[in-house]
Amino acid sequence: MAGDGSERFARDLKWLTTYEAFLRTGERNGIRIGHDRAMLEAADVIPSRVVARREEIWPMAVRGLAMHGSEPRTLLHSDVHLGNWYVTNAGRMGLCDWACVCSGHWARDFAYAVSTILTVQQRRGWEHELLSRYLQQMRELCGLATPIHVAFEQYRRQLFAALLMWTPTLCHPPTMPDMQPPEMSREMIHRMTTAIDDLDALDVAQAS
Image 1: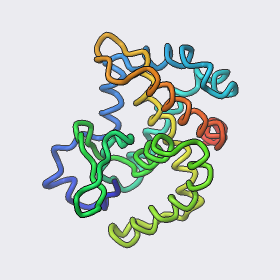
Image 2: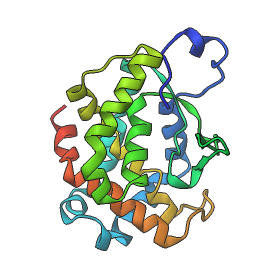
Image 3: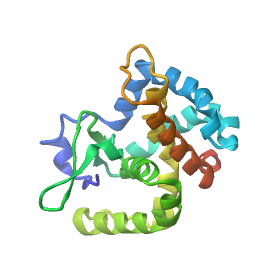
Image 4: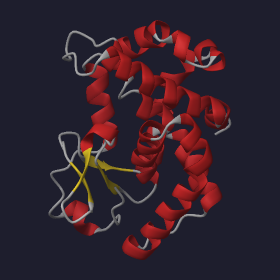
């Protein structure tokens, strides 16, 4: 959900929390515990290279927070999985469940949407074109211009924080309800960790 990084965040949107605060709240609520357990519980659907480096994922998500404060902020839905999208009678797409809305870097929502909504094969075939289209829309509607090679690196860096929305749904901590069927959680974890593996995202993040 691209915004415009404008003064609106200091006016009518000043009530929004930041994505940094959103993730830190999740940390206090125990999502890291659920994440660590899920990386073992779902190891059979996670690429072996990612399983072997699973302890790097949380630190990479934390490092990715710097991006949210260093560039213009956008409006983030934060939970853009397939179940929250719908089609109106007019044929337009819509999003429901805005409980996690906040302000942050656009790449967080893009990484989440592309790595969960699409199958692995669809993502592999479409992610470059989808990113190009997303950047075009940001330029035209919001005045935000990012070179595609920079944007692609930002997309890869935000995959870690996006994954933290799904691993705790498989092994939820005591502070969280059981929100998703295990088979759904496992499929989303498979898709997202495969994206991390396909795109060598751990190596990109380590090189920063």
